[in-house]
Length: 360
Image (tube, rainbow, N blue to C red; front, side, top):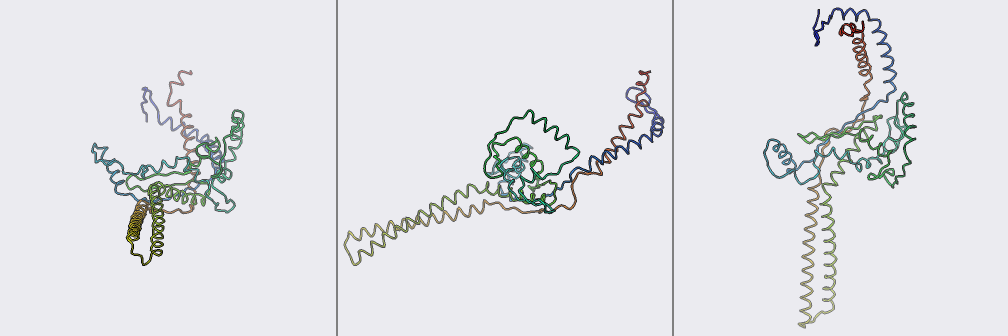
């Protein structure tokens, strides 16, 4: 069986098969060496686990209409109304996981490994208790030594809380650690139903589950704080106004009661005029207190309406099986790769006979 290549040369597939069969012993040697080297490389690689949680946020009518408007705008239809009143809607939640302030807020979460030998905060766990491939230790040591020759001393000031990390001003080590944590925590949002998926990867199964549940809670608190910040300020404002109105009402009541007690059985017009004035002032203070009380209750109702609700569709579960590395897949992939490369090298003269002619 023959086949023409792109340059008009004839490729003898039968001859290629004979060549490969004659080199079968070489293939066996290559497979053995590749299998051994692949196992030596992949077996020391630390296993990692992935825990996933899913939750559905409450989406109000404005947000739902805004999503429909965005979809319609892609077809040239304008419904108006924008994307709702919220600046942070579900599609932007993954962007929060690139916010240094949000990531630094996870550092103080307490984690415990499945074996129970490590119990510390997440910052210390990631910084000091990560397993590494021993085969790469000489390379890491060499690279670290070379970098130390060129790196200047970092005098970035530390702050209190969150392990001394300032999300606005970080040194290089803290920045690299933050990037590592960002790579371990992923968030995605389904644009159709706004279901939020949070995946946390870690070398310990229990730590991945703890962090997945904690990140979910941290995200909920962040969203609730954002959605209710204005309503909370309104409640605090009306609470202060109501308390002030109550104080003024009590003072007015005290003045009126004291005046009536001191002027019993007096029918002078001057007394009656003063009493009427105090009664009018007391009525005004009572009306003001009633209005402020109504405003306070209304603002509390608005706060309750603004507080979003979340439904957990998939809760955090400690993974039973590791998610990677896929050792069998890696070894098989390497065997297939070297088989293709070795085979092409062995039959290169049969595929490209003009190379052999040029050498001769």
